[in-house]
Length: 87
Image (cartoon, rainbow, N blue to C red; front, side, top):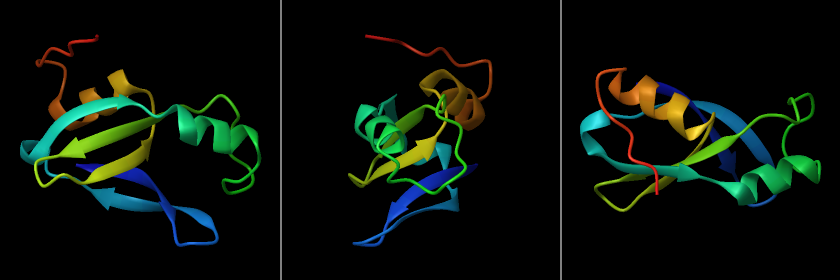
């Protein structure tokens, strides 16, 4: 599934298209740190300040930060049929 990832190369943040296999995703949770970076102007210019970010966790222990609210990212990965458990 194609998502927009927030990437940090050591000095600059950028946005890149990222494909994730839903079968490897173990969880999704809000990423408040990235939201703070947006408010501080450290993310690419022109982004809507109302944007939300989600940390997607994978089976191999990778943590990927993507643009979007948790529910929307979950729906994009798994469709509407699966249930999202909050808490």
